[in-house]
Amino acid sequence: MKWLNDSKITLLLLAFVLALMLTARSANADFTFGAPTNVGPIVNGSDDVVGASISADGLELYFASNRPGGHGSYDLWVTTRATTDDDWGEPINLGPIVNSQYPCMAPSISADGLELFFSDWEYGPMIPGGVGSTDTWMVTRQTKEAAWSAPVNVGRPVNYSGGDICPTMSADGLSLYFASGAGRGGSGFYDLWVATRPTKGEDWGQPVNLGRPVNSSGAELAPSLSAEGLTLLFSITFTGQDFDLWMTTRATRDDNWGPPVKLRAPVNTSAVETFPSISADGSTLYFCSDRAGGFGQNDIWQVPIYRCGDKDHPYPIGDLNQDCRVDLFDLALLCAHWLECTAPECH
Image (cartoon, rainbow, N blue to C red; front, side, top):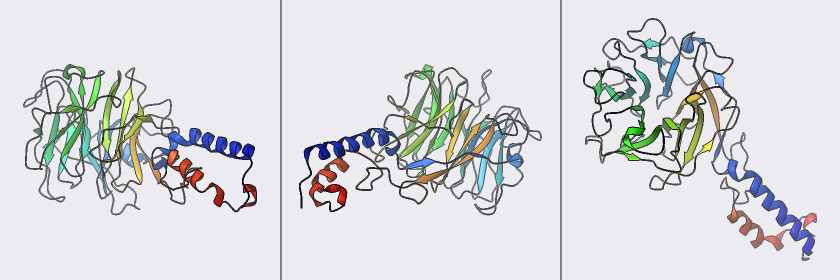
């Protein structure tokens, strides 16, 4: 086999390093997003939608809305479908036991479908049974066919005297992520926190701030955790108006969260994008936006997620070991097999 001359080796190495630089950010995650589509006028209507949460089986979509037929300013609603290939049906109000004259916002359904968390979002007189200005509440049911219970305040230490909003629970039911106000301490106006418990039957422990690099000087809100617990999506605003979706990942559930990455267009636009919810199978991201093409104020949108290695998402250029990352391991693999190349361009 002929040795490559020095100039050709240099050019090929430079080309590889350039590919590494250009693809590093997009290759850090093992998926990309497709084009968002509106879930339609039956769900969204002409009014406001705040928060969206998809059930683990993909057959229930919970949201908050000020649409007619409710019991307060914002109520909790659910739309259902027979299969994931069917259209969503007419939304159903969760009723006067769950909803009240107080605004109910940001619902999040548990993986087993038996617990529904939400925020009261009442900036004013404390709601009876509350802890702070806004609290995390929960309703439960014995089976998916049973009626929901009356709301129960999650209580301390999850809630505190300030504002706690946008709860979401891990698939195993042992971690509760939420946003909490600056009065609790942290980096910005609202930070992301997590409370954990050893088993489902035990109380929540003292919440822990996710810290930097996840939290910033802005307001981190509306977390959504993937089923395997390795991807966390949330929204950030620095002005109270420019909400965008961001994502952080970790290699294992014992690792720290990595630096957040802002989702690219067409998921984020100049409009509001917030309240993400990842389907359990990892195929679809739901979120709220007031972008053009909607039917109301904020609408629920959905966007497909393409996994690295699928036919719709080939491996990145330079990903020689096909681990969905272009990194120094690929460079080492290139160097190790440099002289094994038999293609004409290698000689």
